[in-house]
Amino acid sequence: MKIVLLGPPGAGKGTQAKSISNRYSIPHISTGDIFRKNISEGTPLGIEAKGYIDKGQLVPDEVTINMVKDRLTWEDCKNGYLLDGFPRTVAQAEALEGFLADRNEKLDTALSIEVPSSFILERMTGRRVCPSCGASYHVKFNPPTKAGVCDVCGSDIVQRKDDTEETVSERLEVYERQTQPLIDFYNNKNLLSTVDGTKAINEVFESICSILGSVK
Ligand code: ADP
Ligand code: ADP
Ligand code: ZN
Image 1 (cartoon, helix red, strand yellow):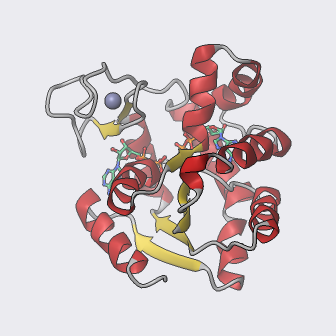
Image 2 (cartoon, rainbow, N blue to C red):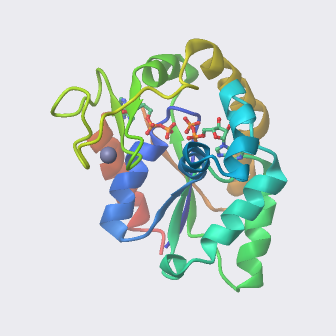
């Protein structure tokens, strides 16, 4: 199964991706997580990406597309994958289409988690993440069992540097301008499915499973 997750920052893509990845045994590929790993390791890719990420802007298409194409050729992708945070521009979506067409493959669905912007600020400023395993928590809506500690791997959880009020509003503008057009892009190809992301985390997951159960 090959799935693209769409939705504004803070929609719950990362949260749902972890559960989908476990349920369907496909790798969760988050471009944000890959960038953050490169930043923490100080790689040339990380150094280049950091300036854009800290400002809430997109990393240039060419860099991002090459990074994803490389990742999709790994062995663990042969039975499918879940893309979280990619594509984010029409150029990225077209590159993914070309990559799939070259292999005679196709996407099963582009799943959009719909959340109005009025929900986003509270979700993102309350977000805490695990720098080791990428798990996402929320101080109010999804706290870890033990305060400040990741349930999955026991590392200390942190607030992302780009989850501040100013950066969030820039990221929402970037989303509306550059990523929202992908909704029409996939709708026109009859690949779009949508879920109401304002429901509780487990309810959203139930809706996603019922969609994924019928995409094949
Ligand atoms: P994204 O990957 O789309 O940016 P996340 O999965 O990191 O979003 O979720 C953003 C924040 O909102 C996190 O703090 C997460 O715990 C919280 N969250 C995710 N889904 C829900 C939900 N359905 N209801 C309330 N809070 C949620
Ligand atoms: P969120 O889901 O909260 O928006 P991500 O972790 O997906 O955050 O992304 C964090 C940042 O990494 C983005 O604001 C952007 O700067 C960069 N980034 C992630 N994915 C892409 C992409 N596909 N194209 C360009 N930049 C990206
Ligand atoms: Zn963890």
